[in-house]
Image (cartoon, rainbow, N blue to C red):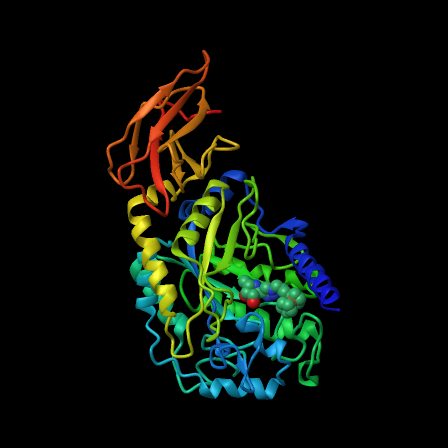
Length: 441
Ligand code: H79
């Protein structure tokens, strides 16, 4: 029985991911040059912060005294909580410890270049002051502040790009909004077209009008989206010239693919961004302590950049407005590594080797290659696969003295042997190789 459920879930998941990628037309009409210009900052950035914050942080994964399995922001769906009952959580949401500058400074310290925050998740609760629906943080909570406004100001102050997540299709609160697997409360029933026209479209107009520059529009789970419904949102994008959109609006191709909780096995030739949690939940869950190690998180970032992608790493702040301490600690540790090695990440992409031949990865940027050694072999030396030319210089980014030996190669190709530094970085030691020209395999 449990196996059947598992297969069913796996199929549903595959379907939902498939639907997210089944783009048929591009959203923006532009030349390749215009597109490259629009995508330039995003391709350079490589590392961003995802923030899942909403009133689901009040129950924090526990309902009626029991832990509800699954991701925290889905608690309303998983526990089939009636709309009116879930809505009462707003009255208990008062995140007095929220400090937009502290969040932005933390992202910056981690080496992140952009932030994407949930402006409305599937539960239908707007985390901004909305004139469209009273079910929002300004009107329905004792907090009486607009965190998106404060975050937008802080992002401008610290030169961090800001994007908004908005659940355009699923809305379990407003009548007519979609719900994966169907509605569970008659209060959810209604016309989806009315919901799109009267709630989703005007709210997206608000977030694209009232908060200054919006760099990214991050749609999610296009349940029941059609071309006609997607078309309702397209004119709004003109409010933010240069905006970048993901591929989850429905029907349309976006600017980038969105592998969720996974890293593609091989490099992709299109733009893409892996979004991932630090523990197992997006929205805060008091019972989830399955934190990934800093080493895993940094190596994920390296793996992703070596395959030409971005890493959007999630934090789930509490109902008091605080980013959980285990996340803060890891982000600071990532930042310490990035401070030394960031130049091997920013603006870098896929390297020339199909297999580096050691336990690590390679990225490329202009005439430079960066080798990331995760674990040095027992003989204390890595060998680098042959390229057509030898580098003109080599260095460890941490400043350790370097010893490089050219290996006897063929006429056209030269291999290298590089010895480990005295104190290898247990996360990843980075070697920069500079060539006279862009190195080719
Ligand atoms: O916002 C985060 C998630 O809440 C959201 N996307 C990220 C960024 C997301 N929504 N849906 N999914 C991810 C995947 C869908 C999983 C499903 Fe299911 C499988 C929906 C129905 C079957 C998991 C199992 C959720 C409900 C049952």
